[in-house]
Structures are given as C-alpha cells and as structure tokens.
Image (tube, rainbow, N blue to C red; front, side, top):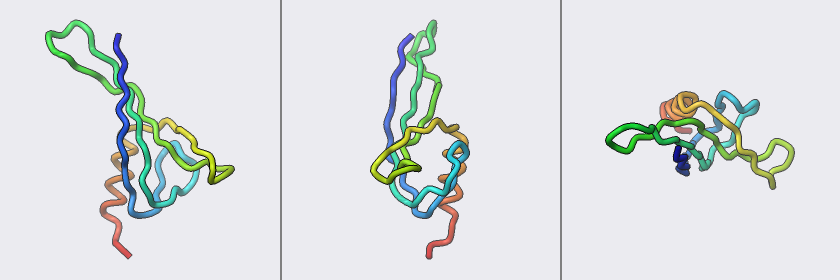
Length: 88
C-alpha cells in the first residue's frame, strides 16, 4: 500500500474556529497536510484520504507550532464561513 502526503497553504481572512481545535485561531495562512493511501486492485491509480492535519500556532507559546488532526468537512466548513464573513 502506497501512502502519499499533500501539503497545501490555506488562507483565512478572519479569525476562525475549526472542530478539533479548542481555541479561536487568528486570520492568516495555514499549512494543511492530507495523507492519502492507494486503492489497490484497480486498473488505474486512485487514492483515498485517510488523514487531514492543520499546522497551527502553539497554545502555550507563539514560537511553537502544533499539528492537529481535523476532518476535511470541518476544514471546508471553516473556509466557507470565512469566505462568507463580511469584510471589515
């Protein structure tokens, strides 16, 4: 079984909350890592998502970073809410 990781920068224009993180996160650009595993036995290459993580500033110190497991649907919801928030 092959596992691959994809890294993507996601930008939030407003402070946001996401399920799995117990605090309000500041606006900014966050790295999101998605792990996918190959689906064996097909005549073409296919992968399924097995994990999604977001890199956030540490709760104890701004100089630390935490990798927190989140749901892909929760990430999509946070992005949708951020995009629909009024600009100030």
